Image 1 (cartoon, rainbow, N blue to C red):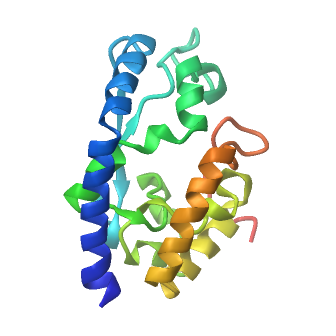
Image 2: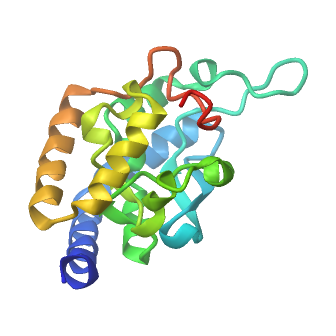
Length: 203
């Protein structure tokens, strides 16, 4: 009942309200990020959603496209702009995903949508993260985000799927607000964002 009817309705209503409320901030960020990124303020990337259906994820562009002498992109840390660093630190880069929620591609709360290239790397348990719509925030995000290992993230994702409830979603929503204000878990110990998932060799 909750997953099929209540959760999608709450997602749509809350996402719409938040977009209207955040409109002045969105317009300001579009202006600042366009200046910092040569006119590009949005970042589009294909991600797998529920049942591994591919959709186009929207995010604010926090990194420029500078490349080295060989034409390869510089590291995330070197491409992160000053305004991009602030936007990422405050998690404002996720705001455009409210549009993904309105379109039905995502939920406000659920496992984060990861790269398409990771799909063949999951084991049978980890694949369960695609049983539900991906979320803007989730159980793994309020329990370490980019400071925990991939294995721990997937364990949190699967635990969430097996324990979804209105109470749990409300708890995650409040914990997310707390994490955002404290700017916790944004970077891993060795990267500006998070190292790529390369499989389950460590297991």
